[in-house]
Length: 85
Image (cartoon, rainbow, N blue to C red; front, side, top):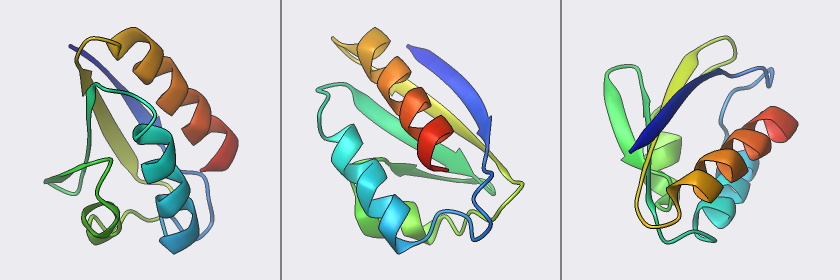
């Protein structure tokens, strides 16, 4: 299992468009990817769950990756967050 934290820099946080892009990125991997924030967590492959976290700009999310391709998934999600959020 791998995990990392990331501070959201997008001025409106994780809203519909980037949440959809995050879900699309997460579905590329077979590992289970979970995003946690505000005392809640959501599987990164479930759009409504990710949006339901209500993550705003400046908040820290914790990403946990577990599975066969966790190294690649962890780096892919980290790169996505850095470039998009």
